[in-house]
Image (cartoon, rainbow, N blue to C red):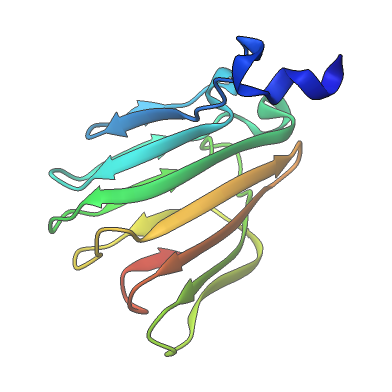
Length: 142
């Protein structure tokens, strides 16, 4: 019975998210869909997304800054693509960041704060970005 799948006694109700701590360069694959990446800023590095066509429609991931420092951490598409589109809101009401056409990097900058986050969803052609930052200068999308 379909409705029994998520019941606690069904034996298959463990719907925890996949969580990975990232503190060095990483190249993601289609299998990383659904993962929450906990970003640590101890060094400068890039997290490279799979080609949008390879990731496919529905690929998604969330990136949360869990350890702040003074290094830039980037989420970037494969070098053959400029496929990030979307916006990062700012809790301090001073605007935010946005890209209305495909760009090639999402950056947690020096001065970013723990909890600044972005979520990406792929449609097979582009990655759509949404997120939130404490202050307007914590993240950029360009």
